[in-house]
Image 1 (tube, rainbow, N blue to C red):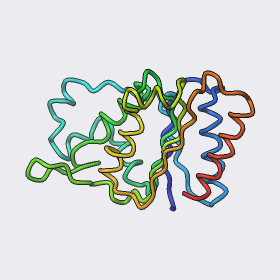
Image 2: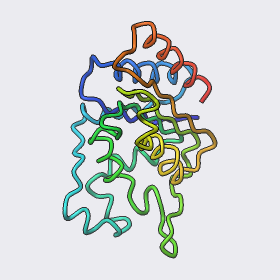
Image 3: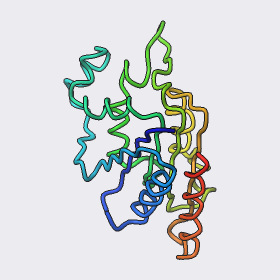
Image 4: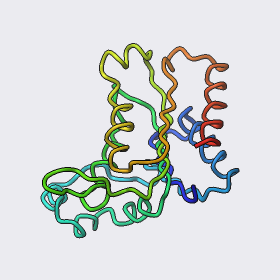
Length: 193
């Protein structure tokens, strides 16, 4: 792993998610990985796919113009780490919007005979670090969409050598000790990624 794009999606700089992001970045820095921290809220990323963008969605090449800087950052990375809270059993809107607007045809996938083929194959490591307010059972009862999206949809367009989904469930009742142990686990996971 040489360059990691860390996608961070939480509006509050003093959140536990921000502490997780700091732990991820610190562990990668200690490994000598070049980290590109993409704080979607701080960068004021616009998650809304416009009508013009949708109409031009399949125009490979031209479709990247509105998000060209983000496409370039994604293409430069050989690792993708997503740090986000799970809200309403989904991604925060800003992260979902990033996937909608940046994971475009010709960027994250190619359409061949109507089938999606991976196009981010330079991504060798994929990880998600996240928290859920509810228990693992509650997430399972609704199908755990964020886990499935990372480990199936995002995985499919990258086909990485290693994928990790590191989640703290039942955050609403987590003690300081529980959160501390999870921070330590995240650090270890990033050292092994």
